[in-house]
Amino acid sequence: MAGRKVLVTGARGFIGGFLLKRLLAEGYEITALATTESNTEYLREMGVAVRVGDLTRPETLCGICEGIDTVFHLAARVTYHGTRRQFYDSIVTATRNLLEEAAGRIGRFVYVSSFCAGGAGGSGRHMRGHREEDAERKTGTYYGDAKLDAEKLVRRFHEEGRGVATIVRPSNVIGAGSVWVDGMIESIRSMPRFPLVDGGRHSASLVYVENLVDGMMLAASREAAAGRTYHFRDDYAVTWIRYLTDLADTAGLKLRAANLPFALAWAVATVSDVLVRPLGIPTRITRQVIGLTGRDNDVDTTRAKQELGWRTRVPYEEAMRTIGEYVRSRYGRNG
Image 1: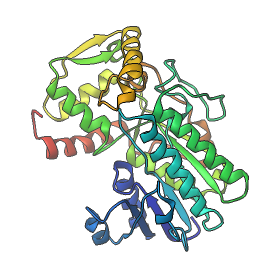
Image 2: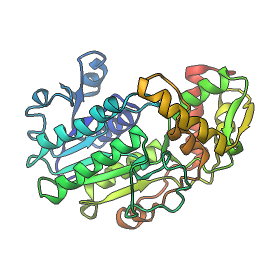
Image 3: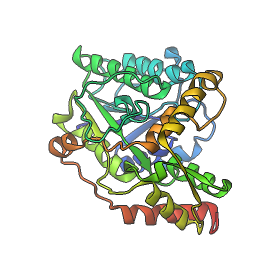
C-alpha cells in the first residue's frame, strides 16, 4: 500500500470494523462510505472521514476516489434471505458503479468476495481442496451467484488496464459481531433442539476475522497480488459440532442438538428456495445455509500462503477466548 489514503465501503459492518481498526493503528488516512449520516459520528470520533453516497446510485459517488490510493470494497447484502434483485443491486450493480468511479484514479482495488462465489454452500457438494483457478459455475444461490458476477467485473477492470485489482475470498468468518457468533448464540438459546446437518461432523471452514484482515492487508500491498484471487481459511481442524459446543460454552449454554441428514435438509432447502426465497420472506432454510453447514468447505489456501506469506496468526483457542469475552459482555452467562 504505497499511498496512505484508503476508501472503505461497508466500514460499519462486521469485517469493516476490524479493518478500520487495523488501518487506523497503522496510520492510514481513511474515508468510509456510508449510505446516510445516521450512526456515523463514532467513525468521525475515530478519525475516519465519512462520505455519504449510495453505491446503487452512481451520481452520488462522483469524486469519491479522487486522491485515494487503495479501495477496500466490502459493502454487500449479507443475509440469508432476499430477492434476486436485492442481492444483485447491492453486490453487482454496486461493484460496477464503484469500479467506474475508481478507473484510472487509484492504485489498488481490493474486492472482498466470498468462497461462495466458487460454489461453497450452493453446489451441494464437498469443496475440500477447491482452488482459485478451478472451474466455477453458478449454483442458483443469489448471494454466491452475485458474488461470482461481481468478481467477473473486477477481473475485467484489471485485465482492461483500468486499475490494479485483487479479489479476496473469505470462508466462514468468525469474531465479535459475526453472524456465525450472534446468529448461532441466538438460535442455540431459542431452539429446544439445534438442527445439525449430518450431526455437525463436517469441517466448519472458519477464518478468524483478525487473520482475515491480515490477508486483506497483504492482498492490498503485495505486487504479486495484482490480478489475483485468494482464499482465506484458517488451519483450524474444527467441526461444526465442536465449534457450536465451544461457542455455547462461552455463554454458559448447553448445545442440545438434533441430527438432520444432509439429503433431507437439502431437499427441504431446495423447495424453500423455489417457493419462499422469491418472496423475500426471511428464512434460514436455504441451500446456501445447508451447503455451508452440511458439506466440507475446506477450500485450498496454498496460493495465499505461497504468494503472500499469509498464515493463521491467531490460533483457534485464542480466537474463541476473545469471542467468549464478547459473548459474555453482550449476552451474559446462560445466554
